[in-house]
Amino acid sequence: MSRVLITGAAGFLGSHLASLFLDKGYQVIGADNYLTGVRNNISDLELNKNFSFLLHDVSNPLYLDEELDGVLHLACPASPVDYLKYPIETLGVCSAGTQNMLSIAKAKACRFLLASTSEVYGDPKVNPQSENYWGNVNPVGPRSVYDEGKRYAEALTVAYNRAHDIEVRIARIFNTYGPRMRISDGRVVSNFIVQALRGQPLTVYGDGSQTRSFCYVDDEVDGIYRLFQSKFTGPMNIGNPNEIDVVALAELIIKMTNSESRIHFVELPEDDPQIRNPDISMAESLLKWSPKTSLKEGLVKTIRHFETAISVS
Ligand code: UDP
Image (cartoon, rainbow, N blue to C red):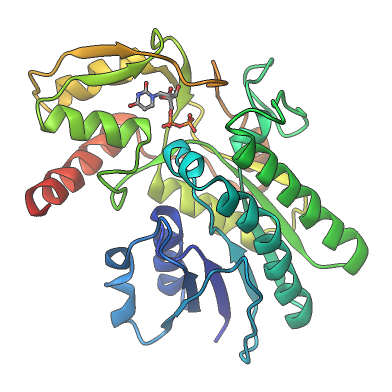
């Protein structure tokens, strides 16, 4: 039986990816320090005999006796609210954490996948963004802990590939949403749904003309799984190219929740990217992957998740 280590396994994306690997017949060792991950996300996984869990901060070295077929490094605060609250931890898990996980992949002679981000493109000057665009990042802005952390993590990953011949994969993940997001996640889809369900004003930052392209979580983890299985070493965009501006998203969520909430415009955070849209032609041709879930379908499932989460909170 093949076995993988998934860091950030109690996180939103990490827990969905762990479920998928278990479904595909893998043994999964999940690691998380619960900085932003939550126990509840893995309660179903813990019922599976092929899942085991390590409470561990991967910024510190980790030694495993088991043989591994892959290390998938998803651990990292990913919501701006979280990485601004934990700037040093974010840089730590991107730097020392990535190096520790690459060391494991080297020791076990197994494949390594880095969960990178569309944030490596910063506030892009081209739209859509393809993998050969180098980005427009403020190295000392508040978001740099995440942007530059992930850029360093990518550099370290390809350096291990070049210097030690480790097989590596780099997924550039664009905005992802779906069940298991926390009420307090702070990202736009979760904020708007929670606010709409509670009858509170939807907080649109700036004038809401900035765009994002939202990928439903099942599509996202399917793309990451396919990338892991592929032979492609360079970075690959995994996201949904369906671009929408933030005001339109707010209006859609108000309508879909039958909410009485209104839109409330507040200050735009520093360095908030104006546009974001993945060019996924590489994933389409090399992975035979493209997202299947429309924004409306994905939102229906996500709204249902938050209705339950709010009712028990
Ligand atoms: N945003 C917003 N209201 C919120 C949260 C976010 O208008 O309550 C905006 C934010 O300014 C950004 C976009 O929505 O332009 C996406 O933000 P998010 O934090 O989800 O992810 P990002 O793409 O910025 O990492």
